[in-house]
Length: 193
Image (cartoon, rainbow, N blue to C red):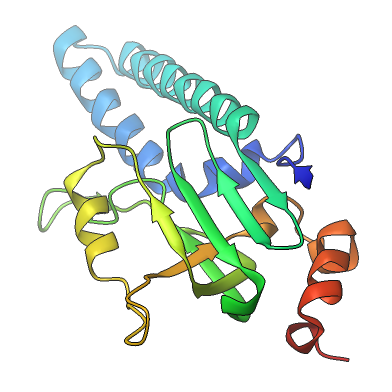
């Protein structure tokens, strides 16, 4: 068994889907700060400090996520586990394709007022393995995530859900590295020429 962990330096990629909500957050706090203090410069300062704190919180969450996330490759298949309690297991024979994997980190619904400024957190997109596997989730997950997982296709023959392992989150060019070597060894039909 060989383990792979996300590469360091991926925080900008992690932060990218949160940019629109962070901008919305900044402007809301700028307005509130300016109204409450009756000073635009103080409103800007309040918005900037609060947004900076929120970026700091995201940085801490990113660090915890990457330190506790691991992909394990073995002759049987690939397993993805993280510190939060998520576990995905995909046997080599059950991998159906290599394709784009969307990893949703936050509620995908739009935030903000209808008719006003609105923002949404986009999914992280990377290339990874998709197939019929096993999934374990922590007992307490947000309702939007539970609903999304309930809508995942299920293999009619086995009843197993379609699961994804976003290898591109570990290494954007994984197909040319050691993870790609594992896939070429056990499922060369997926890699193409």
